[in-house]
Image (cartoon, rainbow, N blue to C red; front, side, top):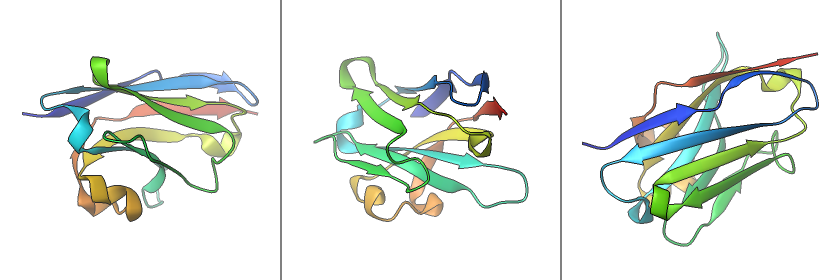
Length: 125
């Protein structure tokens, strides 16, 4: 059974950096897209970045473009989200998720089949 586990969240000051990791067990990444979503209480889950396991195509939401970098290590079955220049509005629970290769085009949460438990990121001002 495929599972994903996030790590790397924490508390950081505005302007700082964090790197989130998403470790995947089960089938390999190359036939999937791996996405990062975030959610704050009372708001919908926001898709912020995604990468495909076959050719490394990437997606970034406008809210994080230029600050966050997604990367993949297929040998380690791990996806990373490097978050730089963090802002208080980046505070949220961050989730890693896995879907088919086509999910990068829509970033619809319902199209991603497997979700991690989430990791809290808190950015203080």
